[in-house]
Image (tube, rainbow, N blue to C red):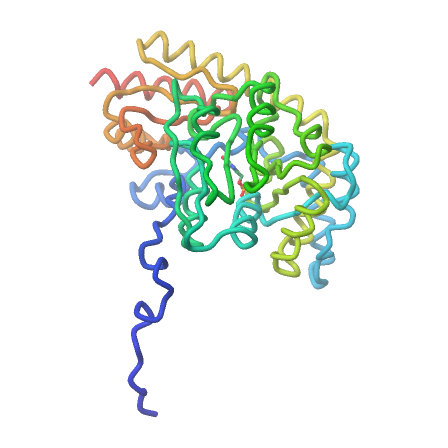
Length: 370
Ligand SMILES: *Cc1c(COP(=O)(O)O)cnc(C)c1O
């Protein structure tokens, strides 16, 4: 059949689709192995803030059991997980919105609140997905420079206008690893006009010394949502599970925006079990803090500046970040270059196991000396 004169899909797309930037993930181990003809088992990936200690063993057991029922649709309402989260946080089951990674919850915020003409206030740099989701809905990112690698809460508050629908703050911040002080964060949220929803991204809060407790703000009925993920301290990044907790009104609003079966049953089962795996969680936090201290000391010995971090990664200043990233790649160590985050002299490094950390320090020493 002859093809009727098809208009190019690019001409049919919404105006901001064509200018939408792509997310660049950390390079997968298998891809680097193919590119360089290396043995995947010799490659160390410290690029995506994954958990070096693997998934929670209790979660793995639960996931295996769940796949036996793989022919059935999952519980779209995530009943068991909501119950567990409610206990864990001391909130009601209706105060959660559960997503395919907390990235999906960020997108749900866009679905619910953003359109052309709206503004979204965020730090620069902060997690790049805030900007991507803002642009995806045709809204405008208002980026407020960090000061000393920290979110400048006062400046963020000043940047909020009548057009601002959302404000994003990650604490600890990704990519810098710095956490906002708990009292300052609470004061910041209270200072915002009621017309803007504030999302506090707590992806790394488990690793922080004294993370803020958002529950008083939620209790006061503020437009605030805490974002959490199972991708980091619970080691379940591949299963894609994250959630937001907020007022019942905001949670149920976002819940309407999701696909009916957005979270698969294996991830739900694994997450329920992971929340009971206190042992694993404690071990990961303790080992990560120890590894971070070791990496910081190693970088100091090499005379390299670093940003003290409260997360499971840190920034180190290597001069030419792109060169060092590339040289490390060729030695089988994947880190994150930060040109996209406007930090071209720095690389971001995830804390690994003790062996991986030593390997990184050895390769880094060889690379910065030449
Ligand atoms: C890793 C990360 C997330 C989690 O994303 P998922 O979609 O849950 O894997 C969210 N926010 C920040 C700042 C992160 O670094």
